[in-house]
Image (cartoon, helix red, strand yellow):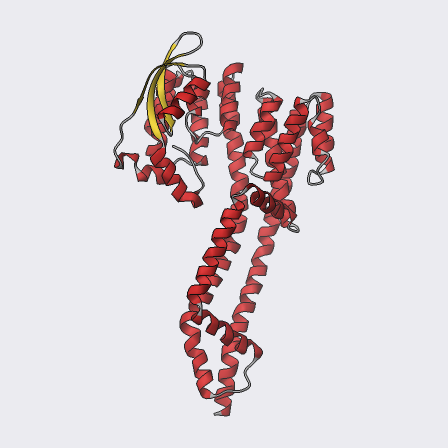
Amino acid sequence: MQIVNIYALRFALCDLQDMAEFNYQVKDQRGEFLQGVLEAHSVDAAVETLHKRGFVILSLEETEKGLFEKDLISFLSRPNRKDIVIFTRQLSTLIDANIPLVEGLDTLARQTPKESFKKIISKISKSIEGGSSLSQAASEHKIFDPFFISLIKSGEVSGRLQSTLLYLADYLERSAELTSKIRGALAYPAFVVFAISAVGIIMMTTVLPKLLEVLKEAGVQELPITTRILIFITDMMNRFIYIFFGVLALIVWYLKNWINTPEGRFKFDMIKIKITTIGEVIKGVYLARTAEALSTLIKAGVPILEALTITSDIVGHSLFKKILLEAEENVRNGGSISEVFGRYREIPTMVTSMIAIGEKTGKTDFMLENIYKFYKSESDRSIQNISQLIEPILVLFLGLVVGILVASILLPIYNLVGVG
């Protein structure tokens, strides 16, 4: 099944309806008979996929499925990064124990709790039983990205599939850990801001109008500036609440669509790394991700041109993707990676120099690994510092908001009681 971002649920549901399963029987270029299961949007797409692999199609039949057989529960419980890490590590252990690959996959399928992932593993097992390699079988499922497939393929070619799977699991764990730290650092402030906004809207639409009406009816003339501002905002909120939410929804819709365009995505990504302090942390995270992915692929024996292309697909930032693709083109024409990196001020001089030394000494993967370790350490430290700094700032902000709110309401009431 195809993995999509959770905020694009409607597109994912469309993909779920469009994707179909096809049982195929083919002959490869050596004339060997293969069979397996393939996911594709149509018969033509399935035929094109098989032809690209150099197969001669003997039979291709779509698996019949009812509407409910597409299983909304399986869609909502689709495998995540943690599931793939566990699967990869366990498969490595089984291969190390000299258990045949098909038998190992069948064992993992039986013990996997998620039904959707169980089906995927079973399909991979059937494809391998039909003559496909692990990398070929895994490439038929969108949950395994090009990085994963390339490493598996290199492990098969080098005869070190077990160690490659183990290294791949470690990489996925490290990547997930860094992502988790960033989300953890942002979760608390995001929740506080959301809570303040929600409480503020509820107060302005239910509680404050009644309290402020008392002040208006009492004829209090000299109201504090904060009270007058609060009355104005409350009146505007209650008069135009539907327009307010409509405009807010329109802004969110526009920004979402703008970010999904190439130009919008590039500008948004640039804003992320230009923000003072936080931008440096975000840039460090992308540098660490780029260095680790490249180092991992090169160590696994993936050709440098392919490694640069794959890294550009998984780095997750438009500028770094552009730089990596330029580096790939430059290397293809006889140039170097460091030459391209040196053109961009977003790439620190230290990174460019280390890669240049690595290219001259033939130790590019070693230098990239050291770059990754440095920026991961820096990112971890910076994220922790930001988390510690955010908490007191939010406490002060909350105290200020509550203080202004209380003063805006209570001071006029005290004046009213004193006059009375």
